[in-house]
Length: 187
Image 1 (tube, rainbow, N blue to C red):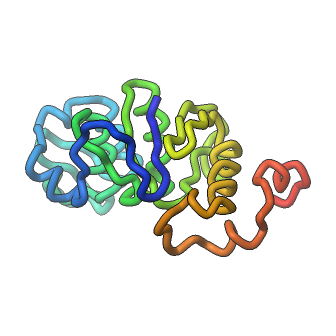
Image 2 (cartoon, rainbow, N blue to C red):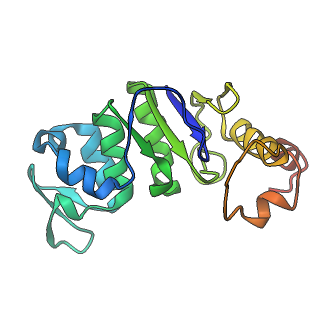
């Protein structure tokens, strides 16, 4: 399972915040990470690349490239999976990383922050349940619907998202529970 902190709320865990995933990946990279079947699958799915050996991949055009040129999203996933001593900012990951966060959460306990409403399986990915604890309020969510409801409730709470920027209008304007929108066939 993974614990998730929304916005700039941090737990009191003794973890080093990684503010630059690219740099952290370069400095701590272990070639044997690319022997792990889960890492190979994440690279293939997120970056459309195939791992050739411990230091290189074929990109989506069939060109050889070093592993250091992988996307920030897949590097963040690998760091989250392989390093338990750091705090990853999930905002470097897109929705294409969400299903891999769920898979990582099934294998290891991890903690990360997230600055946007990631799609954890509602509309874009499978509706397979996942376990996640929102550390801002201690709520455990098991579906994207529950995640979205917690996210929307925090928008209504003035202390829910301190210093939160770029909140999309589709989240603010409806001010309705995601589960209500689904029930009424609006999504």
